Length: 147
Image 1 (tube, rainbow, N blue to C red):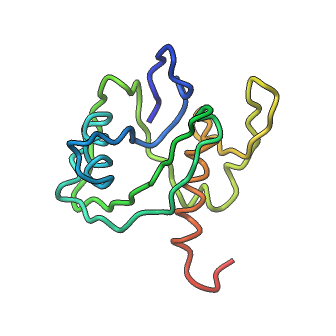
Image 2 (cartoon, one colour):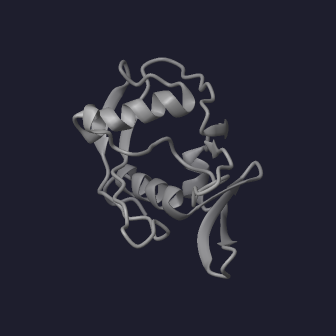
Image 3 (cartoon, helix red, strand yellow):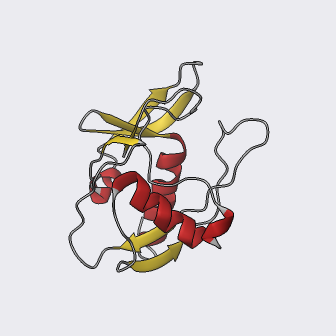
C-alpha cells in the first residue's frame, strides 16, 4: 500500500504492507495483523488461509525505543479487492516472481544519503522494512535446493 502523508509518521508516504500497533484488546499479534489489514486496506482476512508468520524484525528508523514487527502471511481463498482506509492513499499488487527474478532490483537513496537495496515497480519504490519482509518471504517460499 501507499501510506498517507502524516506528520510525525517516519514512514509517511512510503510503500508498506498493512500493519500497525498492538492493542491490548487484540489479545495477540495475529488479531492485530488482521485488524490492521481490515482498517488500512479494507481486506477481511477471516476467511483467508493463514500460512504462518515470519521472524520478527526491527525497523532501523523506529527511534530510540525501537519496535518489533512480526509479519503474518495469508493466502486469500477468494479474489481480494482492497478498499482504502484513512492510512492509505493507494494499493497495488507486486508480482513476487518478477521481484525474485532481479528485474526490479535497484538502490534507494534515503534523504540522509544512505543507500538501501530496493525494487521499483510501476513508479513505486519498495525499500527498507517492506523490502526486507518480502525478501524473507521469497527466501522461505523458494523450494529446497533452488538458487
